[in-house]
Length: 512
Ligand code: BG6
Image 1 (cartoon, rainbow, N blue to C red):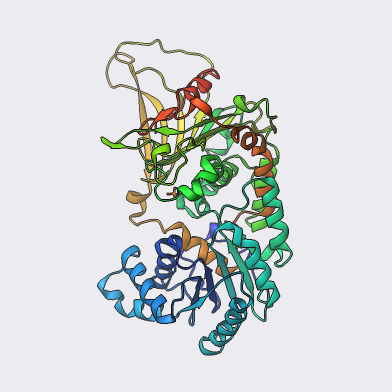
Image 2: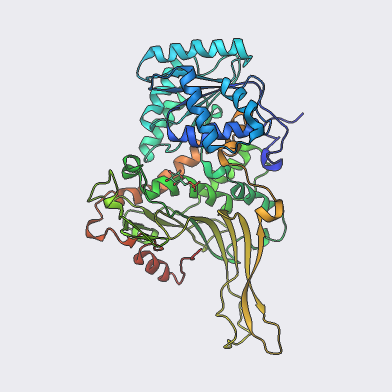
């Protein structure tokens, strides 16, 4: 009989035909954007795929004084707007919505949690959810610790069934706050009850990285410093800060994307093969590789990191304002909307092969990818010719989004009597190969949390190691950028200084 950990979905795919035990998902922050745009539509999509248990229930918790009916109406609108609902789904929508409840919640008031405890008891009775509870914290981070403590006080941290808690990012804003939050959370819950969510880990292509590396024999022999010159991991967005200045001003690109999403992707590219697919075996390897990254001092930060902020520019020909002109942004803001870091992994596999991670808002297009650039052949046999294209190094590109797929870039001879050489692509495209849409990241992650599989969630020690490494950058970047910002135009590929930095290492940023 396999344990939950051994039945790892990485090896089995989403079509598991495994449904969780009857349970209730309690969402704190239920009137927020994430709930309406992602969480409720993802849960509904699981219902469409028949992956939710009978009696499945949701309790929304937020300050607004909604009744159950008002909350249901709002969530019905969210399902209709953001989920893929067809005419055949009318009954399913109604039955899904009828399992939704609301508990008006002020996390500073004890009655909030007493009422919640009572409501959950009633749901257990009526719907047979047997005390199985998945809490989801999607509130401002300052409420994470108070909510956990209050849940502990009414003994909602563990009952007759299972209890788990998903915590949204950001998990801390620096090393100290991360440690404090971890202490607070772990004073109420056990580590194996805590699911730190990182939605990049739920993306199909990111999950495929382990299969690509460890279920094929052609890549892994090349996957090391002998053959790989360097790796670039990019998450570019064409959107600006939108309506999130309140959060983003205190965060910036390094905290918002690199410390979490791109570090997670990095670990899957760089880690050693795990001894098994058990959650902790995989997460041990991920933590190990983060710990192998060479730390840098404050003085060394300019050699390891670059920051930028967008000024006015144009996206797809349409003029857009600079970051400092966006609503809610300080006109002198030094917040980074572009961040790039270089990670040197001091271990046997990667010594001398750097990883460059970059993320930015207001780039020319939305694209996330991993580019493995291979070393050039030891000797150049073929002379350049006019009909040949300039030699480009071999690359393996994993496109995380959009157009998920994998491309191998290599050199090939043009047909004809002369030896003329071109750069060509060999493409694998998810859409055309599998003929179906990849599931939304939140579907996978919510389902895994209900099933008790924490593989695709961040473990505390890795999160801590990543904050520790980035602290010198955060300290240096907390100083005003002065006249240096803005240093790239919206719609461009980032600051010139960052291009120059890479050029000084005889490399250049890819234009995906
Ligand atoms: C979020 C960040 O975690 O990820 C946002 O807070 C960012 O700033 C988003 O836009 C990007 O996610 P995706 O899935 O669109 O790449």
